[in-house]
Image (cartoon, helix red, strand yellow):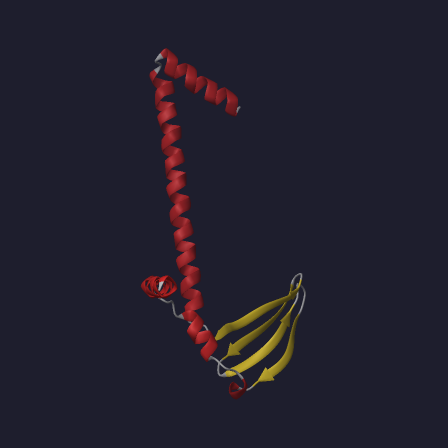
Length: 132
């Protein structure tokens, strides 16, 4: 059926039939409307999910994969830290960790981005020292 529709549109354009030309324009307009609808729906869902996740009190501090489909995660729930094991089918609490046992400065430094200008100046200084 789609082949027949494409063929009739193409032959209508060749023949100059106005009904087939309007049909082709209608199909193109419908495609554009569907494309814009998909775009705005995706943006709406993404914004909704982002706003939903902003106000949570549970954060994944660190995660490491220990096998296929198996991770160990350090999570912060309120003021408590928990070490959990996560598999495809189960979540297991491994240990409760006090705030004193964790060095959070490492994670805070990872969140900060270093400007490219600092990298560039360090590279220039290293190169200049190498030339001397």
